[in-house]
Figure 1 (cartoon, one colour):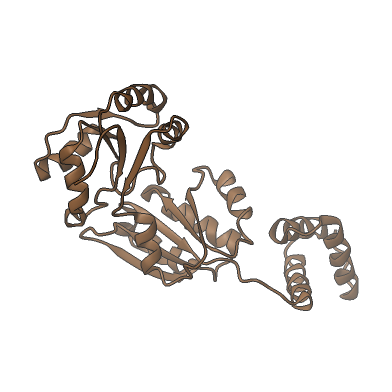
Figure 2 (spheres, helix red, strand yellow):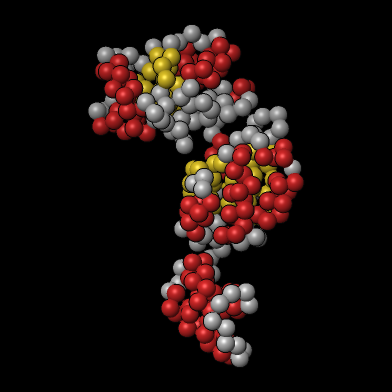
Length: 289
């Protein structure tokens, strides 16, 4: 058993398969005075399934600041409260940060009840390095903002994990291919623990082609686990890579545009790349501006 007096329990719930509900999570939900849920209608189905009768209140991104006052008051009076999200571990791309931060400020107890997490589950099956990784949540919905966010991550050497809505999965894979390159490995982990679970890892261009051709793969909850950038340690090799990039770009666009795009992709100074591209152009006897 546990001492539930004046404590907030962060309770992980199944992300699909109800068999993943832990005994400890059930014990807590059956014993607390109140359950704060992201969507009470959705969570009521879970509670009904397990015969849990505790009262609920809604706590979501639009009312968290206001509801936090009520929860804090109840905790100070000795009540015990559980926080759950629609699925998985609360606060991981879900509401709760503001509340938990305030509890720490006031010296109130916050207790984790571990369990399912789409983030960790996807990492465990992706076949990409997990000794270092970063979680980036949801990318921006608009193409320009999404590609800008990816450009900022293009040199990230850690494995990256993104959540994505099904109706944006093709657009996001397209952006990943364009910004990170067609050969970057990406693992699509879709509908985790559910009937139509998908786990597929391929170079992003191949994965994009496969998803585009399969409308069924554009449904359900999606996690993308993305290979980190491969570090180039030898400066001579790095110089060769930039030279090759500029040479390819000069066959398709003006010297000015090639220098700008190379600067965006490599993070190097545009002026230096312009001079390097000019030398390449002159060495090939070309005068395209």
